[in-house]
Image (cartoon, rainbow, N blue to C red; front, side, top):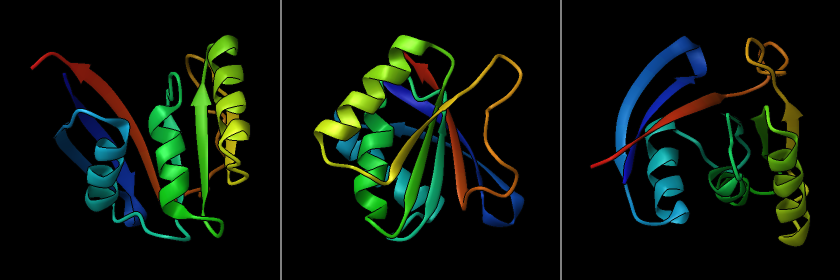
Length: 120
């Protein structure tokens, strides 16, 4: 399974890429390249689901960066919080989203990603 990435990077660029990788870690590395994410970056994962990609991005941006994982579903938000705490990631915030709002502050991030899962 792959996914299409729609992201907004610094400067308002809209990037669309198809990422195919087996593991969240591999996907995150490809995302970091596409988005220009590096240590110290601030990134949002809109519709984070279970948070696997957000957790890997938090590892990539390191303690000087930050990841915002937005999610509508309360159970999933709690799963992400628990996973981040279990991994010792203090640079990941879980944000409550709605169907029409991400919950993010304007200009919060260097890059924002959204994805659509596709069958290969």
